[in-house]
Length: 155
Image 1 (tube, rainbow, N blue to C red):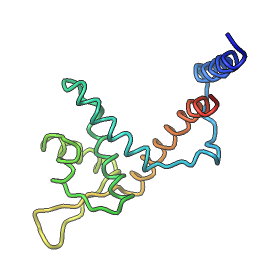
Image 2: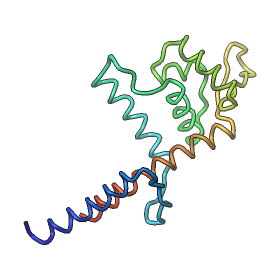
Image 3: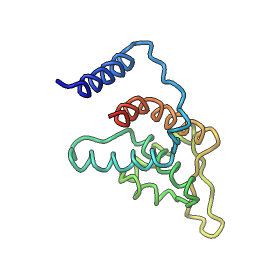
């Protein structure tokens, strides 16, 4: 084993030791890692689809989380999403979407706004609380992944 390989093993060992500590607290995101919550949300959406393609008998994630991610992406991209749209975007059954939208609405994370041009349609959007919650989760994910990216960049 040459010196470079030993250095890489040492770095990997150090990172794994830090990650496996029970009281590990994610460190602050360094400025060199431009935190892009929208990119993480899009990656999650793609990951959900891939997991369901590979394992169609298993749901990739909680339907509520899937709805929140879609609404987060829509808000960041300034796209309006209706109740019907969310059913198609999340690939959820209509009844499942409606049940979860009620739970998210009751929880103060999502609001339904009537369409002034079509009384049958309702627009969905994240509340400030919903946006803040999803943003915190995405930021937390970025903080957990940074040590892995540091290792990859170090090699």
